Length: 539
Image (cartoon, rainbow, N blue to C red; front, side):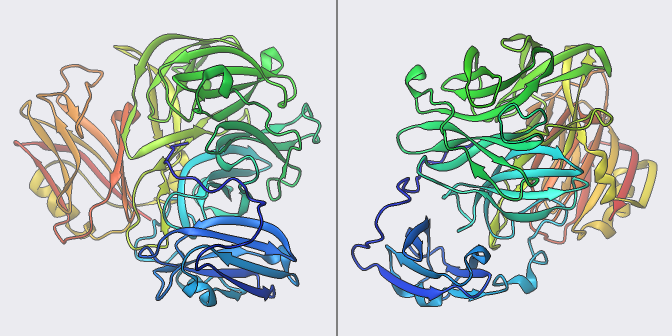
């Protein structure tokens, strides 16, 4: 969980008395949605809901005092027929503009907005960051995520929720977890408790997450018996409070998985200066085991075969930045053997991998947060493409590789153009009709004639910049496995606002915002370069 230093007030169940020039409105709930106008020019202030006189929620929002920039919504379908009281501690001018409806304001243009990514997950409204609780269950991939449903800026952390059957087409579901007396809902993970070790039922979906307050961060548990559609928080929360052990508030982002050979659960928790390992038999009582320094936030720990050989498997530990170590793990202690290494750079942060992938599939599938602004939209940020991770032997040792998940082919299925052994000018001509394409996949191999620079521009931005003199790809050190190679291959995937580039079959990848269209389109550049292969795939 990337921490930004703002806090919702943790006392969710205080009196509804309002101070200063605050206002209050009351209404009977008759519609499914409550549409709230928001404007960036207005000051953020605390809004509270009470239902039939009882506190229901509170959050901070920039309530529009005049014309709104956009609307956000609350799904109140479970409260139909009850009386809602809304109090706002800021300028009350916008209270009368809050409206009930059976439609989300702006639903007529939703998913057709000018800057809405076409095949990356984005929330209908509000802010999105870290992926949380990635788990496969009963034919569905579950994506939980850090979410502010009340603005396009970071605040009010909840767990949003979406599901997919193919990793490419997502259905956003109601909020999964909301702030409570322990704090706002920070990052965590989800598992399927097949054997009912926690006592909430066989195959219950269990979420372990961080609750954040100004004083400390603690680990809490919630469970679902209906495939993640509704959640119950454990009455014994928090299940882990380690502030005193570390003399630090920074204890967050539990990654939990089943260690089958030890018949126990493992939690990897970022604490102060690295990742700690805890173990449990029931997901509720946790015992400290070990600590690996050098990581910050959002841990993951998993086993992968080396070169596809399960008898030569290694464990990978990484943090939010994507830097990783390779080593061994005995269920309690991770022992590094090499690292830290990197396999990706750019906009990706806080990536996580899916739990409970069926053995017949066996892939380690990852999704990361794309720190890419969505200008002028009622939503902000995105998830990057799902990727498949593997370990391969290179001349420098075992390294982590990342390639687009095979499901990407569901989006890109039509080869629109292809050529081999052509010049940069010929490549520009071939690409001229694709410059305005919202979505595109380009597979290419460039051969440099000089040990200098070459690459591809799109609308004036260098989306591929290979510098053989300084051994840089898009500004990051990269040396190909064949040390004297003059060729570089790239798999480039474009969406409305993003660019993702996978180098040399996944040895390195990067992601970045896509520049606004300016009519200049694609340009291959470099000193007498040759394009060995160029394939363009459209939706």
